[in-house]
Length: 218
Image (cartoon, rainbow, N blue to C red; front, side):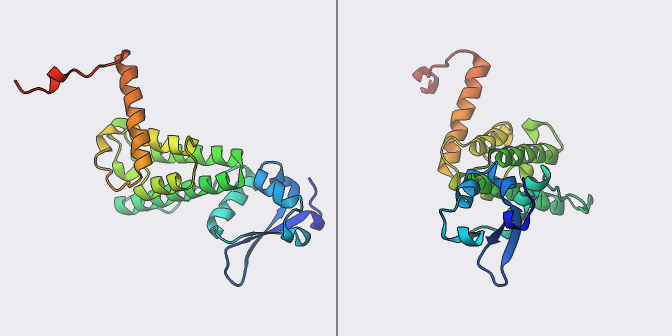
């Protein structure tokens, strides 16, 4: 990988003026992202200027992605959260969960498997760490919010591992499922029902047929 100035590309995020620009060495990102690899091959009009425009993306999310590309690590922003303020801690936790979902969605867009895996790993650890209790009784305020679930489902394909993690995080906190009515995605609840069904079959080890006698009034 070369760090010569001729090997750097400008990543322009959003549509604001002045521009939100990031410099990125070509070899660093093209080796892991199919999206950037194709863009840097020259087929785009911006290729001659070594410019890639991302008008619909957020500066903070692209910055987080590029930090991950450069360092291999994700920034955790827990420092400074007052432990005496539970509501503030939960709000900050949900902000972080949403940020990690946005990062996963961006990594899905640019086709970066490493970034997708890192973001899901961080998301899982964040939720498990946030509840401060066992899975069955985990505080629902620490599960991915309706906004996070909806964002994941609206921006990923069927069968996505990101969707699967959303389902499994909720599936392991069965006491909170009904309380999670703020989740609006029908696809999420369909996946959740399927996951719960499989978990029941694993517990019972056999199929459990439905007998009408169980539903008839005596």
